[in-house]
Length: 494
Image 1 (cartoon, rainbow, N blue to C red):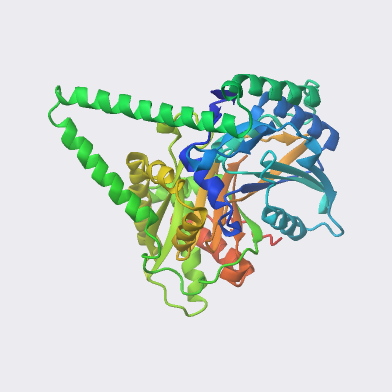
Image 2: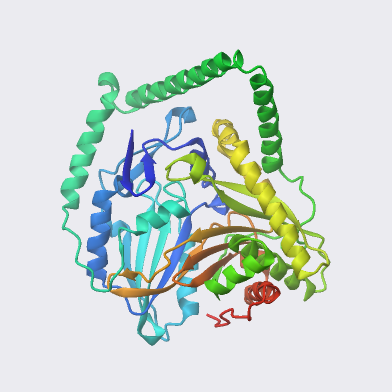
């Protein structure tokens, strides 16, 4: 069973193995997979209008009023069910910054909110409307658990509360209490009470049904594959080659503690967080990427690598290689699922070289990583096995994976035109990607001619977060200059 109330996104009733893995590892707070967003506006959003729009979104998107129900003994992934005690007040807050209302105060507030764990017995999202920002501005903070949606699906969700005009008509009124009651009644009727059983009995029956469907599906796929072998003698050889490649890919992505290199400065880890934003004109990034023969994402990641190298050079610290990760969207091949992405761990050279050579090296490594993610399918394979293991084992392996990872990157395409939040025009967006045991996360989002990079860092790992921001900005400027563009990074410090 699935719901598709959002354009291009289907919300399945049961988590995928990968989503279940994200849900399980979050029991270790260091591995929190949640993402957040700070939307800076030209004035404070109208709280009453925003509340009405969120209520309407909840009516249109069942996932926003659903909680996670664990599977029986972890033999099946958790599933989603209506929260019978759903209350919008648990998910929407309205606060005001104290004077002077600086960006630093706003970003610090966002970093603190990101550290607050979700109540795992309630729907996994949270909004905060913020007043009191200097210059008459306002802001909105949003936090969404990664099991609900990836970056693409989160933007599609946002279309339910973002508008294309300041004075957009109000949404239809909804009776949330009635809606929740009806959803709970419908869900219980569809579950069939496990054939007359309740509670644990229903869970046992549901898990058994899931395992049976999975086994039947695997048997059908295997039978279909064997039938085709007679028509194509090379098919079994190709299948074996793909299996070997998948195993090798899995080993390269999950082998704990075996990756050499990495920053000697960014070894410590903590649960503390610091947030900042680097803003770059999107046209300059596009022009530089074209001149250098790569993509916008190549400029973004290569600029981050150059900035990281600069950070170490300023501290007279030799650096041979950096261990980073980036996100590959699998949505073209993965359908309309709410999560269709694959994280990739790669190593990039950090020794002396020209800007152009470093860009070419990073571009080639990212291209190889994307190809591996789209053809290997390793993450789904390993997640199903990992979910059967004790949580302590899984989180231990996950921690060891990230212990030598320097930073993570992600890139999201936002709206190319101005948007509004309850009467307030969105000026820019800062995205707080999951740090999840690395030294920092860089998540970029393009919006209305701007390329905005959220720097979500572990200050204990990094040491000097302000200097990290300056070095990362300088790295982007070096690439813009190499691509024939004037340095145009916004150097406003929060």
